[in-house]
Image 1 (cartoon, rainbow, N blue to C red):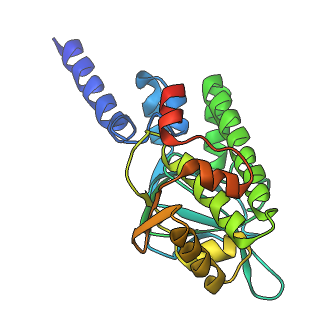
Image 2 (image 1 turned 180 degrees about the horizontal axis):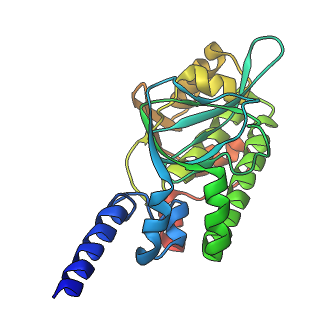
Amino acid sequence: MASAAVLATSLTLVRKTCSACADCEIRTQAVCAAMAESELGHLERIMSPTLLQPNQSLFRQGDARSKIYTLTSGMVRLFTDLPDGRRQIAGFLLPGDYLGLADDEVYSQSAEAVVTSKLCAFSSRDMDRLMATFPSLKDRLHLMTKAALRRARDNQLVLGRLTPLEKLASFLLMFETRMRRDFQSGPLHLMMSRGDIADHLGLTIETVSRSFTKLKGQGLIRLPESHLVEILHHDRLAELAGFAVPAPQQRLAAH
């Protein structure tokens, strides 16, 4: 009887330990997707939750790298400070994305919350040990690193566009592709400000605002609210951007 009671208590503790990861809404998108239900406790034991308020810094470029992070809600901007005081936003992270793993001794970029954001933080050393124990975790992080590199390449393509309209059209289409992971319909929610978009595309805020107005005037997008964009004609927007991006219906069919 005593052994049964101890076993029951142990199972209860395991369930409680694994509850945060098991109940996570983005579990299938994040690094923990590599772990079986019975293995989640190992991951959660090295995890600490992190909450950031809008514009709060997570780490700065040049800080010693001690942790890696998975974003579970909100949005984080990655940027580099330029010598003239400006900043270049390299990209925006969405729930399921991770940050910090590709860096070596120090963080190569700064990270700030765009809106209130929640993250899971893992000690770099603990994660290295866990990857040695669970090869599937290492494989998952390798795939996520490749995806991050593809996003960086795509961002370079956006910056290489010649006109502000081309840049904004490319940005909207690629951002929509990332936001539609679950093939959700409806307007695209841009959590970042016009200033953030400007710093990402290498434009001024005024130019970004005029470009939104021009795309709306051409009937390519609708702006129900300041942070909502509805793409009305994917094919025409893709033609303007200079490359083919499938519409949500096509992506759903392909899925």
